[in-house]
Image (cartoon, rainbow, N blue to C red; front, side, top):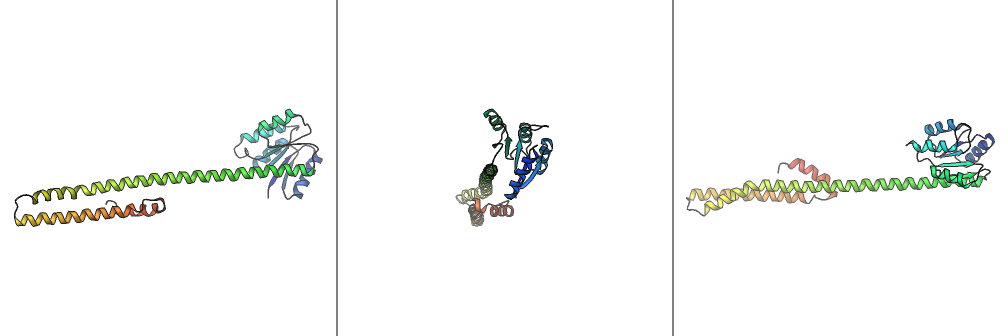
Length: 233
């Protein structure tokens, strides 16, 4: 249920607004004191504030200004009530951040129309804000995932380079020695070295190739787990 705070020093008008709101299933919070109303707005955080402009303790402009300066009340919709209809009053209220302006006397339809219009507008703004926040979080997550994938790819290449360095060196030496005049015993030994290092290199290449198929956002968690198990390669 939406709650509406009404700040009005005319008791008859206050009671009339309260009755209209409750008939329309709104929770009405009422006070004839602007100072008390300001405090109640900060404590209850109503869905909407309706406030008279001319008040004995603090005028409606000051109430609105105070609410707009507090983070928790800054976005609460605000409707001014006034017996004056001059354009300067309307403009001043709007410049302070009022959402609507009702000139007394007003009809029940005008009051409910203004209330519902403000609530609908803020509901749309809230949904848009939430959607934008979710979109921003999604983009940030995608960027983080892309960066992590790039780092993992770089790490795999680095591990591959490091892992192949020793086998390639041994293969180069063994190949060179096989071109020399060596005994049958040495021949068998260098052939065995070649076979061992080739098998080692093939195993390393297969392992890295197997991990690379996980280099996409949908398998990022699987890749994290596999790298934890396989490092060092």
